Length: 221
Image 1 (tube, rainbow, N blue to C red):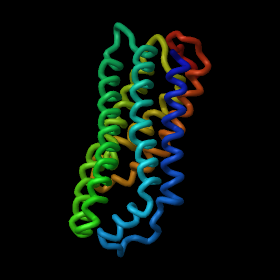
Image 2: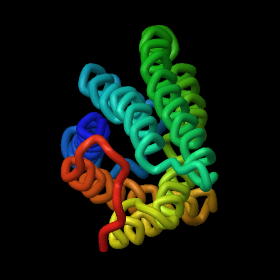
Image 3: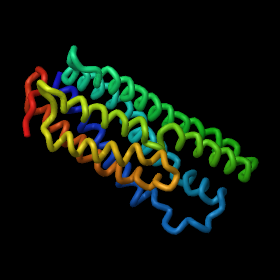
Image 4: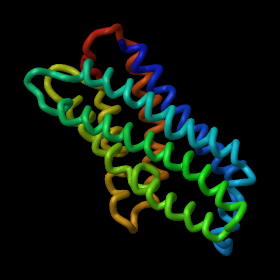
């Protein structure tokens, strides 16, 4: 069971790395502040296949791996005398649903915008812009669900009788804070901090899970 969780965590870290790599290379429009909504859509349409692959990896694959990791961590960290994981796990599944839904909206939305672009580029751009707002609301711009999940896991892990190492719990609190604060409009930029620090968190979780056999974790500092 631990190996399943470790592989899921590695997959999620890989999804993040893949997503960030494309964002700074092939999916980077450069100075696009002066672009019209039509030009922004055309940039995506010129890279339709790449965008769809990117979208599937960072949303769908990530969401599926998140379900697996949430289930494994619940089995490992849950205790009869603690309610933390009973609250944390639903947030993990909710986050997975939001992320997958966000990816599906972008995928289907791009197909619809592509069809409409042939006859009405302006209307297609408006459709794409509207779908972008919905996608960001679900899982692309606000990371509250993910932040709360990591927060509750970290707090639950601090309980008496076992859990992640102290340093990993501390890292989890930093990741959680960055994610939760994205709910503040002026702090949405922390989404990048959440993603980058969570890469480290996922890798650390994978390393810890690989070290133990299929049994409850024991506290290590």
